[in-house]
Image 1: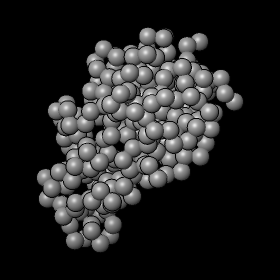
Image 2 (image 1 turned 180 degrees about the vertical axis):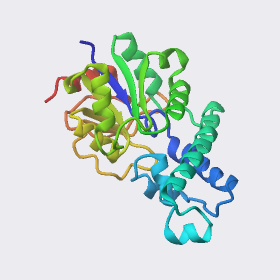
Image 3 (image 1 turned 135 degrees about the vertical axis):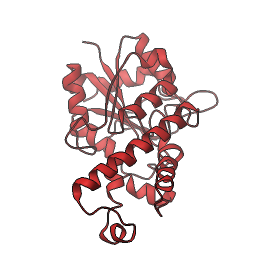
Image 4 (image 1 turned 60 degrees about the horizontal axis):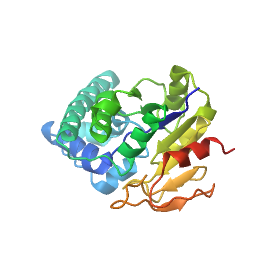
Length: 258
């Protein structure tokens, strides 16, 4: 059976959180007339919560509900969150299409190598599917994006760090953990992948560099693109010989490690 390379989206395919999701959230708040503007620091703390709707739900504190005249009924709050999230996703997708967030170093290169070698490809993300597909096509191009299975959005009961999204991907692709390597960027994502029994490469992003990546098979600054964007190796428990960029051969080697 062909092995599979499964990517998270935000922070892995592109550094989307700071330059995409955060401004899209803040513009949504402004358009809705809400006195909310998340700072980079505040949003970094909110990233501990998996899922955009779940982050929006933190707005509904008793004090803010009263002062902003928001609904108190839980069903009405859920409907409002869904409308905000839909508007935010539309803004974010437009930003991706405008080229605001380029693919991270090494993504297009490693995807092309894996596809040529017969690897199966997938994205497993708890972000909205429309956002994920937009980032994927921009990061690797429409031709390579067409080879991906996409597992995204509200399709599992629990979001990362729960392993649900990766367990779903394994079931749908008919794969066992021994056939898969995941690329993640956050401790939550790593916990989700490890919970599904998957070997994981971490490419740290702007919000995650200081997180705990214990259990990762490899931690790097990015997958790397020589000569302009070399990868820094941050943790290398299997002693891979990496000279500036992660190659498909390195990922193949990880499949052979216990």
